[in-house]
Image (tube, rainbow, N blue to C red; front, side, top):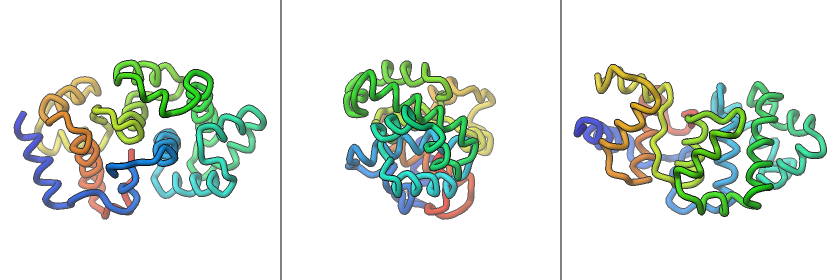
Length: 213
């Protein structure tokens, strides 16, 4: 559908490349520290706004625990400490378990996020979805932004965008994901920037105030 690509071009002309809090998620060259932070953030961002996630991230940084290895070690020893650090993100007991399970999976099976992402997209996605508490939106956020894997994220902002522009009456996750991926060049930067701009457009605010997922 050419209309979807034209909408991407229109939004890009209006907003340009992501800035402020989106810059790390969309930048071309990420460190592995960046990628780990993004992956953890994607889980913490479930059902909350980005400002709350930033407070939780700040707590983890202050405690020198903003890494998959450190979160895994902390969860093994004292889950309550992890809960306290991520409390600003809301649903802190539930999210502490989800973050820990993700870090446990990576640490035990791959030793590092880098090793995990050496696998193909299909394998990575399947394994993420098998972790309790990680659904398609969170998994695809980790894959696209932390792993630079070519998969388009479908969230509530995307569904509203689809409705606004009458792109489809079918709004299921799989259908819309397939629609966007078939309508766009298979380009990671386009996927990242377009999703970010859809969120921006949906909130009607500036880059630096936009919640990431």
